[in-house]
Image 1 (cartoon, helix red, strand yellow):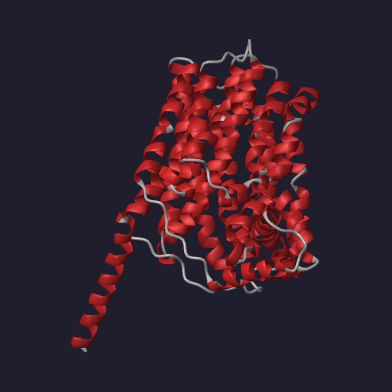
Image 2 (cartoon, one colour):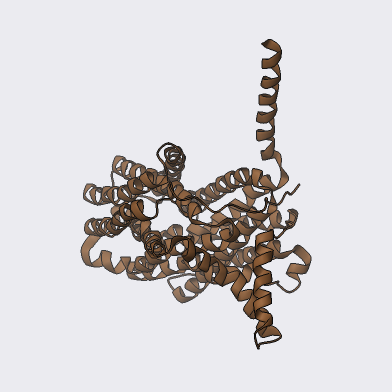
Length: 467
């Protein structure tokens, strides 16, 4: 008995050692810094950006319209195939396909943040808007390239570790761009804050220069699909660049959408409507969160410590709990639960509007909203992942993530006008009400497209192994 147990214990110890050793893998460590570079620009053209504008006295209506710069992340699917297939002159030859796009995007982001730092929105608001748009498009392009790199850089058994370090770096960046920028603005000014954030983009640039370009192998199914396209086009009258462009368009753009509609049929439209409405309530009210805190009378330091730092911790708690609850109860039950929680927790801000600048009220509101938001993030990522076909993961996931934010970002542009008309109390009531369609759609999907009962297509080829 003892002789049998001992080898089992040694095998267990080897398994645990191997599991922890994955976090020493160079590309897994590198994802920590790439995650930081991906997360840094998000708030700098979002919540921190709106706080800066309000602090300088910019009108709420203008702030609301300027929130549209964040829509770049909502429409990145439009140019994702270009990032995937188009080589950059010199950059691609020197750095490789993924690193070239990453480095170009990071240079654009850093330059745009520096431009914001050197521009006074009270005198040149239009120029600040231009810099913000460039930063947002650079950020969205960087996301596309980093997502592709993350999938291609290592074998499938290391993908979990890559995701974990990426998320950790991303959250640290959100803390730096949120609480960190607010503290810098309180101690000095907003120009200093944005200048320091521009310098922090060097973290991503240096990482991109250090890491190696992944070696990609095309699986057999993809080769057969592309060969069928080539064979069909050989019979077409077009020749030369027209044939090549048509082949590229079919493989990169048409294929992922055809696959999605083929697998889900009539339920596909219902799924897309649900994706578009699930987070609309949180996105709608999120644009005005920092202006709300400032108008209510909270200091920038209180906002940094409670709304940003404490809020981030609560989001991480919610995300961790959400992962456990998905394992215990399945995706669909938790999807319905989080669809209900999102509008309910928005009502805590209506209560805070009547309470005034009381610290305990802000803590309770942030706790409720961010825990439910963290739950929603983890559950929704699991749901979106269940919808993808491994042959088209990048394009289909880009479609879903774009659709997830686009309606909310568009409507958020009018939030400043809405607040001026109805006040903060009724604004958050409105934010809760627009979350009701997602609840109805989630219940309908329980019957017609339940991911807990639908098998996900398998991957025909193993992931690339990279050392």
